[in-house]
Length: 424
Image (tube, rainbow, N blue to C red; front, side, top):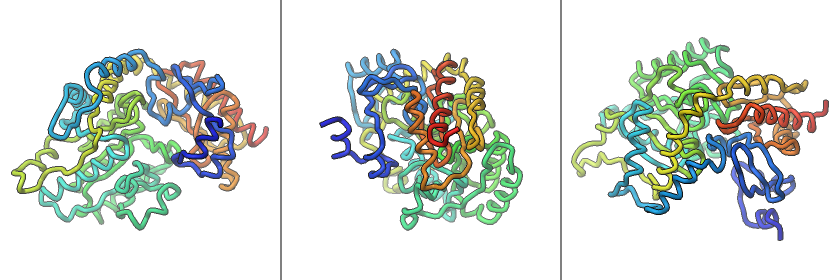
């Protein structure tokens, strides 16, 4: 029995329709190196998604591999409930320094990082006596993960519509489809929304500069700055979700730096460990932390945790990632990605989006049943690249260490996939 036959018998894949999965030509990945993945037949593919946006330094990075091996010689896991360890302490110091925040709470994924921020923000406001602040404001077309709280502040019905009976209702703030376009109109509407709901809003939740799962929708630093100022003017916290945009993806360590915004909560994951191991962090201020102080009998404790919170192996590889990132950030091939994406030609291409090393080829609206974006992304594999689509947008988000030549090959593969599916 082949690997795929065994897969079809027992595995349940995320964001995947079962019947479709079992009919298409699937890959079994056996190894990787740099920006490349290799399947069980020895065929090589450019990793155009950085293995779901997290493998920022490429595969088999020597320093990251060495960090995990060294930590294995000490301890692989020790709980953070009632204990601590050097790696968690040092990583918290580094992340707080980079973010200009004060406290670090570890969890396992981007979804849990946001979930933690929502619960912390709500509890902090309640314990500060602001009991009317029970709602969250979030952008249209937002995506913040797949746990119930993070889904509630999400705004993509395709992913989350069926779960509406389980969710709390967020105050929805309009966001532009691209930077500069209708931003002032969106801010005018946001002012009215905050004027109406401000006393009940606990926090604004936003993805800074790029809304990734929405098909790489972008907004300007000025838009983000104005929105955050508006939230604070009305007494709400600011939660920024940098799960996708953090660790150099837009050119600075965190995207919010471009707007000069320091949030009350910063959520990070994905690139934090170079894509090696699950680890997330929710960073916040000392003022927020102080709202949880008091005698145990007042029950101001944050009653939340995860078994693998602050896992030593994950902390070790995260520290190695932070060490390896600075020289990479000095030579990011942003211009090469913009130029390569702009060179993609086909009548079906409606728009090219690119910011930092995040991009998308947006096709003209198609019959949803035709699954054109999905089929074009799969067809790109025949041209030597692995990419994913979000509806009719084919997303490109490679490792930060990708070369200019590899970027050009990636763009040609995407173009080839579109031509294979839609013809010339």
